[in-house]
Length: 276
Image 1 (cartoon, rainbow, N blue to C red):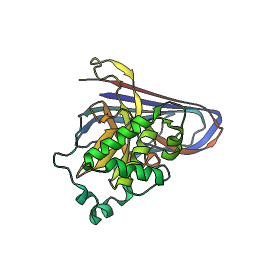
Image 2: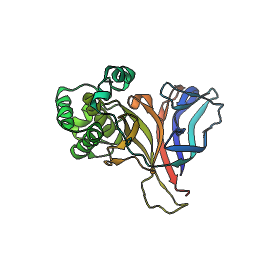
Image 3: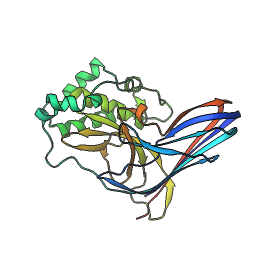
């Protein structure tokens, strides 16, 4: 699959300096292989790459020539496979063991986007009752899918799981955060995944379609595996993962600071093409 992610900014006046980080490089792991990736900017910049704390590739770049627009393009070719839970998943005895909780403390603890809530904590206990951990993960995601309505524009990048749940509306980021809240209250290590979704399962080879920046979750039940609560299904070859973390704060596709005129326009386009 080929993915092209374009982000454009227009400014009211010249920007004299900007410092940026882009997480636009897909991950190479057991489920997917990155064949090609490059991150380019207009105006041109010299970037350097590093791997962040969570294992995500980051392209950092800065620009000191005055400019009134900035475009950042990530181009990737990735081979993807579906994923399933481990054949011999860990039971609750392993998941709730002290050494497991210590090892995965950072993806069990609450965060700004995934806070603690007594009502939802009780819901998490009820959902997990009588289920094995893998089934509890699916049950939590299905509960979120049933309770929420997918409505673009009702939430923003700073909306927490609780705020979205109060409205019973949101987008993939909110579905992921709310599922993480339930899983962590169950005691299941769980992390946030950002990436892309090809929206057409039977797309013709070579056909380019409008793709989607997407978010889902990974749960640890003996090993890490992914589930998409927005669509209530296991992660498939349609999903291309880019970055992981505790929540959205760890994985924004593009962030930075700048000095100069305020932004007057912001445009994001994702195109995906099935190549085989």
